[in-house]
Image 1: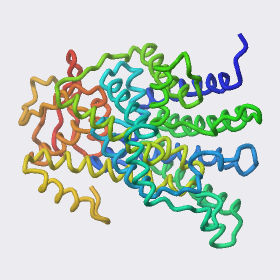
Image 2: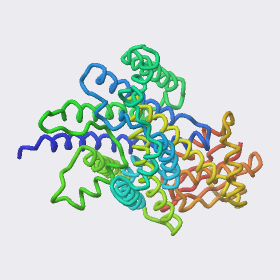
Image 3: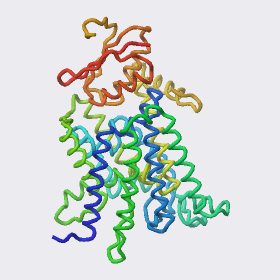
Image 4: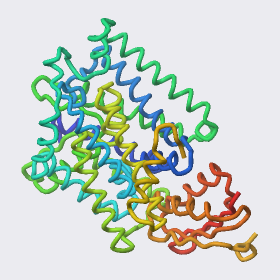
Length: 376
Length: 80
């Protein structure tokens, strides 16, 4: 059977995502865990692994963009409609959601493959909420939030929200030179921090996650931008993201006979498949289910906040945090910082709520802890 | 050294809690303990195994033992 063009692209996405899912399972790559280690233990190792993923993805993606292999302006991240409140508010809500839901979109899919039924329920709720935010009832709220705050960059003389183009406009230095300088600084910083961190440096798994997952993001851009490029059958230029595509996956499964698969859906399914195969081979597959009502409630809240926040901020810790970041879009670091802030805020609240002295006490203590300049 | 030979000063029930709550509660419990005291932590989240190893190496509190018993994970941690 000869596969159609779009089916081939989806197949490459599925296979690449299987590798992603297997690596994430083996290395326990977890962006929420990275924030938790930092906030709760003072360990930045997992944060540095995440930074390494970003840097590797950025280097490969920028090389392809600057050599003309792909045109990142075709991706959603470099849109001239700059929805800054969406990035901040959506990111913050997503950060809260991934903390009470015990993991980001990527981790949730990996956990499903490992037998976690709690993550399956969370993913279904996340998918419904994401779809409602894209096209349903919550889309009204999204449009209301973004409508009032969207900045039309084109009207202000910018051709995209790419940081190199914006700095180029402001300084007169060529966008290519700015892109090379930013990418070099980020990559140098990421590798320097990685080599300086004894725990990161000495662990094969940390390097596997840092470099392997970064390379897979570059591969995703290559698949949709180079292999997927076809004048007669144009496909969306995208890399890995785990919120809107999860909503699209649920819609695809429910309307299968009238729907067509795309790269994002294939990546979602590939992630679960890769984690499943890995957990079966390594005999780590383990059924996990809800323990009590609060466990269920937390996962439901987590799914709603991640679905709504993730769509509002145009991506999650991987979608904006790595794929978006690799395009050097202005929205990506804003979303990423907001996600980390939302997660850190929630963890501090959880810590102080354990004192059972009420929400106000927890909020005051949390805000005191998160004051700029104070750590731990 | 078996668990039975160690004097346990505190017990923390972190069963049914998901990451990052077991670590958060352990941190809170350890903050209220004196140096040298031992807390026994019981968790059900598989991620807790690696988390408590990192927690120990990062905070200096000693992880005396880590074991799987049925569906549960038991940890003994001595406050630095």
